[in-house]
Length: 119
Image (cartoon, rainbow, N blue to C red; front, side, top):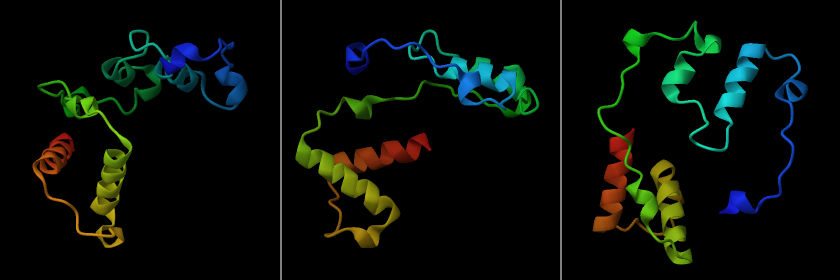
């Protein structure tokens, strides 16, 4: 909804913004920056793009057996819960910064387990 409310603006030329960039790189960047997901280049297509040709190795690029689960994004966040999630994230990297020991409830365990499974 947010994007739909923005005023229409003409797209800026990537060549003008990045004048010394190879044309293949600008082509790939333009395809990756498409706002509409159906128009955006897929990961598989991007890996086959000429700009990435030197890095592309089909034998060393495994494909996931299942789709990524974005179910964690369905949680309705209110201010306090959002603050808790931010503190939990901080605690993952800097436990010493936490003002109190982290809560170990079932929902936190599920969230933590989902994050570990996606890495």
